[in-house]
Length: 224
Image 1: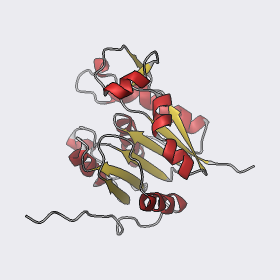
Image 2: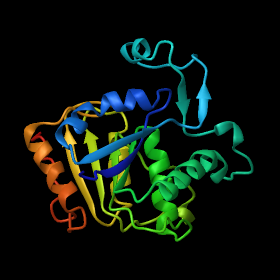
Image 3: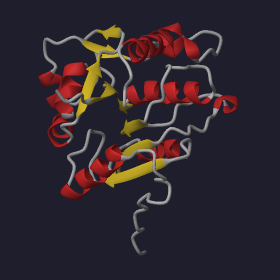
Image 4: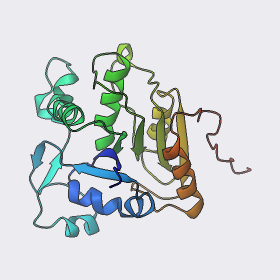
């Protein structure tokens, strides 16, 4: 029996693990040797959440969650916002590991970024090395300058030109020393991948430890 490589995945704000599993349906079809394991955020939400109408209809009668607890923010202690989720994630990574990687979509990327920063600072030791971080519609966390980091773990960044966080997604790339960036023309979503993009991702998953910084695709700017 073939053992799949595991990637722990974090959903966006106001959704849940089932929604992210649906959003990752193409990934599951194309990358059959990877088990994309989705997880609910630890903070339940009520239904008074602004979201896309089509997503709201799909989530009707389902529980929805958040990863960040801003109600706990005290004395400018950024860790108080992340602690419940980060503690749960680290526990799963340790007890159910080893995991091949971690994926964060939208707000879920904040937990992935926080985990990367803690690993880079030597504050978290999983007992094994993650092979990669995967960021989709992600953004750099707003943290004090003293806590900026450079992570050596390879990273994959899926960035949409029509995403409202595109600039912040690009800002996150520079915090990783070995990033591989794939741009697409879609918005704030898990993108539908082209044939070429699927090939690019397969190449990354087969050997994430190679030097990707030399192969980052930089889009050509339109002529004025």
